[in-house]
Length: 261
Length: 174
Image (cartoon, rainbow over all chains, first blue to last red; front, side):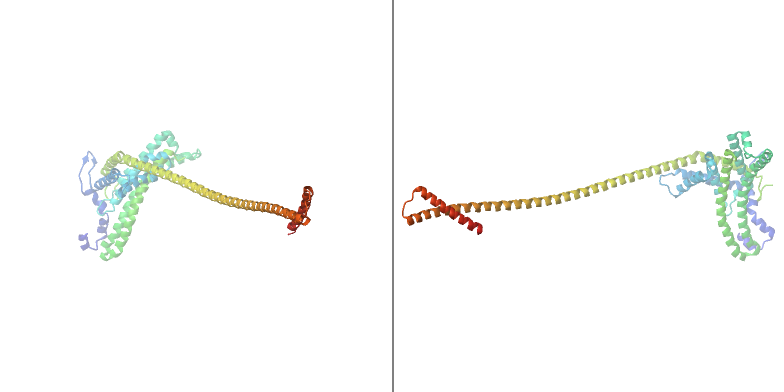
């Protein structure tokens, strides 16, 4: 930053490069190259922050579950409340059988929350702003949804349950087709929503700050307060988007279990 | 494609994501969630037990209070009863004493009256005796002769009767 301060009044192209620096450079930083056949499984800054997030998630819950006492301290209450939150707010949205999936969605919630919050630390990589990451997670949701639906109803009944009861012979195929599309748009929107929210939040902050590079140091009077406001808002977005992803995963799975009738 | 802000086909990220997420799930399902569930259930049971105990204790306290109230009420009634009894007994005692005193007084008055009567009779008898003798002597001296005994007695009797009538008249008159 000190170097850039002396190079005030950058060109638009240079500013654009600065804004996108986090995303364009991550894949080339901190690299451990691993190539298996045609597959590139190299570990870069992106994967490192994924691992950090997973580790923090596990350790946060693990130590909370180890130091259990009957009169809990603040940390234990936090962990227990996290678990209780999963049981009350995530599990059993539609029916009691959905309860068995809440540990999975709770794991997603905590992991996404940790990744979102880590992403707010400067100079990290926001893993949840990567479409490959959110896409893979959404595809997992899709697979689990179809698995539960087929397991519960059998393939024929499950495909039949896509059409609402009482729809005429003429309408049924159209409705079924609409539902088929919906089954695929669900994970697509799931992935896009999280990715877009997180990347947009970061981009807005970077754009506000980049005005300083473009208009000069005095623009900081406007840019910094605005960036701070959006930074605070991003904390809220980090929580709410993690929750939305988790609860929609839960709801989709339970919808497959109970059908839509 | 790959890289930048539209990083769709990042195979290494997807691969490592699935691996690390799977490991995370295994670890959490194995080491964390059962412990937390158990702990929460245990605490819930403990809290339920505590609430139950508190309710039982409160019930007991309520019963005890009721018991005390009842005993207190009983004691108060007992006290009132004893007081009433004492008052009634006192009243009766006073009545009885009064009656006894009245009877005693009447008895004494009656005795006194009888005594007076007896005394009067005795006095009258004496007086009569005296008077009779005096009359006899006086009559002897006046008549200076012996009257036969029978006549004598008759005269005395007549005189006494006169006297008696006179005395009785003066007593009833006086």
